[in-house]
Length: 284
Image (cartoon, rainbow, N blue to C red; front, side):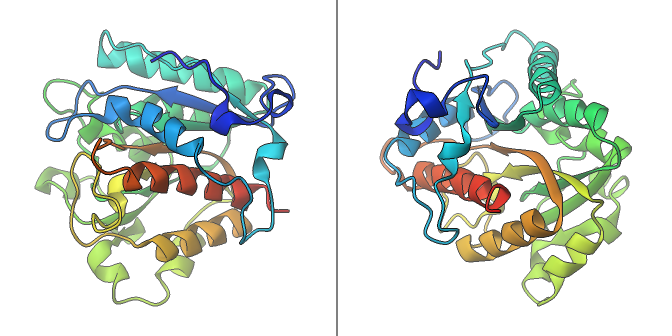
């Protein structure tokens, strides 16, 4: 997948690598997924859906693309998980150093290992907000620490990790998990104040990693492991808007879109969600 087009077909003056405030990095990687395959097709489906999306956001009364969104060439390193992580790390860190608001579209969740490592190296007292169905806290899986099941292990060791929407995990992950900073899906369902509680645990500087399987499969079925009992659209947006308003979100990624050629609704949801998150970031 070689990306040559502009994000959402925006005018070239809003897609310039020097003047754009926002950078979007596609990472079509699916080297370690263990059930539903196809996350490597996620960025292409996301970009195609974005071209068919209205660029005026009603809620924020804004056209955030005018901040400038530079779509980079895709990171297509897939020789080994280690090499992919290092390629993502180097690319992300380079754009952070250029004072860009760095965003990524995956690809499976292992792409976040290199991304979070770069943000941790560039920002002090970083909170990683993981919105996900799965804990992803294994130290190693299938012989590699760079497996999608290990995506947040390093973040748990080195940053302030807040986990939201979790509803599937292995017993081994419970031993390393900080349960006081985990908002399980079953508890969110019964707690009117979970959003405020989660935000209170965050430092001022936040990176968001959003696995699309956090959402309920009734609204987003096209993901590798569609777990029942997930977040719904306005619930997720309400939480994200509060985080962007109250904290300094310094970047984010969206991962685990596994497109289904017979149903484009998940692709469009991912595209809309990305644009919503940018709209919240640059609303003021």
